[in-house]
Image (cartoon, rainbow, N blue to C red; front, top):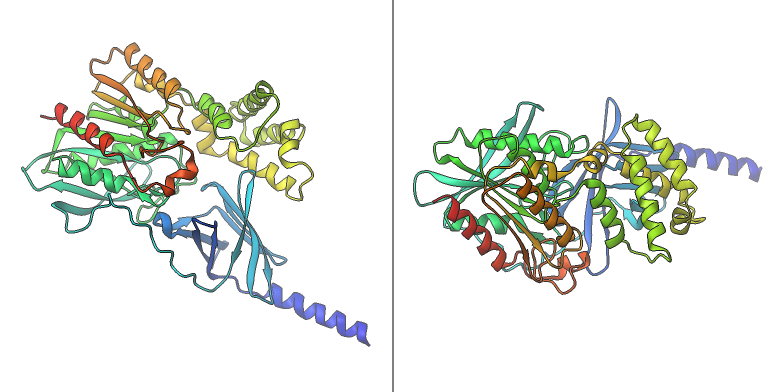
Length: 462
C-alpha cells in the first residue's frame, strides 16, 4: 500500500511541475562587493516562451533573448546574443530557480525568485551632470529605413547660436544604452555633457533592440550598426539647427571601428574621433585579447597562441555555419587546452557548446574577418585617435601603429594618434588598467581626455 502511495505522490509532483506557470518576473543578483541585478520577464505567446532582460545597473531594459524553454523542471534562457546563457532547476519547496549564469567558460551561481530585490544604491559619480542643464535636451527618434527599425536617442544642443556642429556618439560592443552605462558609469552622458557645454551638439542613442530602439541586437553585425550611424547622419541633415557640413563621429571601442566604415563611405562626415579603437583585424584583436585577458596561466605560451589561432581560423572560415560549428566542436573537444579548462567538469559539454556558440554568432564571424585598417585608409576627413596606455582590452601600441599606418597609406591630411598616459579602456585614470577596476574608480572620464577631444573638434569646426 505504501508503494502505491509513493507512486501517486510522484505522479502528483510531476503533474504540479509540468503545470507550473513560470511566466512573469524573476529576480536575481550576482557578485559580492559589486552586485549586478538581473530581472527576467518571461511571457508566453503563440510561439512559446520568450524572455526579456533588465539590468538596472546598466540602465538596460527589455533586452530580447534568443530562446527560452521550460521542460522537466529545467529553465533554459539562451541569451548568447548578449553573451550569456542561464540554466536553472525549479525548486517547488522554495518556488525559485537554482541555476547558473554562464558567460563562455565562466559560470556563476544565480538564483531567480519572484521576490523583488532591494534596489542597489548607485555609487556617486561626481562627473555625472545634474539637471537643469545649461543647454537644451531633446528626446528624438529616427529611422533606419534599410533595416526597418526605429532608433531612439537624446540630442543636446548648446544655447548659443542658431546652427551647431554635432557629434554622433557610437557605443562599444555589447548591447548599450545611449549613455553607454557600464560598470556603474555613464561615460557617454559625461562626454555629451562636456561637448555640449563647449558649443558642440551631441546625438547619442540606444543601440538597436535596446531600451526604446527597435530591431534585433542579436542578429546584427558591425556593418549593420554602421547603417544605424548613417541613419543618424541622414536625420541630423534634416534639422535646421544642425550644420550639415559639420557632422562628426565619436566612436568608443567597437564604435571606433564602426566610425571609419561610415566615414569611408560618406561625404557627410566632417570629422572623426576614435576612442580605444582597433587598427588591426578582428582575427588579430581576438588573438591578442585571448592572451592579455586570459584569467589562467599556461606553461607554453606559443602553443596556447597556436590553439587560439586554429580556433579563429576555423570560426572565420568561409563555409556554412553548421559545418563551422561541427569542425570547431571537434577541435575544442580534442584540444589539451580545452581539457585543461574544462576537464571532467559536469559542465564540460555546456562549456564546449558555449565556446562554439560564442565564436560562431553572426557578429563574431563578421568581426574576425573585418580589418578596420582597410577603412581608415579610405577616410579623408580629420581624425583624432586616442588610446590609454593602460588599456588592457585594446592594447595601444599595435593598434595605434595600425591606425597611423592606414591613415598615412590613405594620405589623410589631418590626423593625430595620441596615447594618453595612465588611462584605461574606459578613459579613466587607472592603477593597473584591469577590467575589475572600472567600477571602483570614482572618475568616469578623464577631464584631460575630455578637454583634448573638445579642443580638437572646435579647431576643425570654426
